[in-house]
Length: 146
Length: 141
Image (tube, rainbow over all chains, first blue to last red; front, side, top):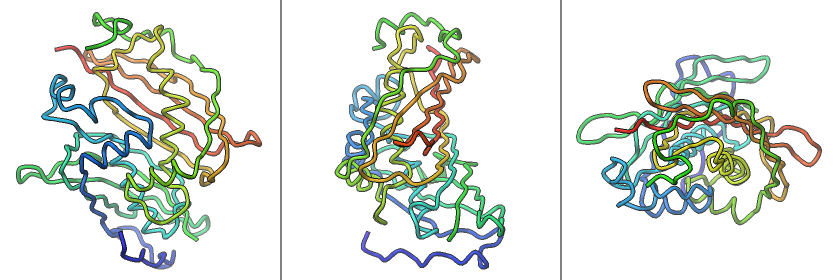
């Protein structure tokens, strides 16, 4: 928050292999609770530690959709326009625990100058006990650039 | 913990493939958009694209997962995959018509896989967002 968003990229400067700027976010308990209210997903897995432990997690976990929302923000910031995102597809591969920091990023795979459309490989990673985990890996996104 | 409707380790009912639920309306409310944007850390203005999750859940998935004919044990459910296709950005103040269909019901290795397609249309009947959500009902230990 506070930092001005980067200038939108020029399509001419976007080439396959380009890594877009990564974006980090701390997943606090308060953020997960706020997301539960705003999204309407009040599954106790995200709100009630005792319940989360009863189904095998160490405590409440973030909504997969909160992690996906953060990834979408990383993409729309790069594009400089929340309306630029046309497609996003992900698999949820690992839980995100409260207190962890998630980092979203992506690499350009295809550029279609005629349609001003780019396709990216996208992911979200975090570090846990010195190991890198991927709550989202091998996701795919399509952006339409101005 | 599972509700009786889905308890007992009964597999998901494959006969529900293709079931479509009556459409519900959802208002893209300014205050709700503001709170959603704050929760995901989006500060660019406009409606964050994944705000589509709110109508998808409230006017779509909520009824599907609670459908007693389906037999889903929600206590064992995790989110497996999610996809969105946006035809245009959502607009504050518009009312969407939300239609959900059960696209597939599968069982593999004791796990149940449920894919639900949710389409959101604007006041002119034009499709704005198509969402596809795969929920996994984890096998009992």
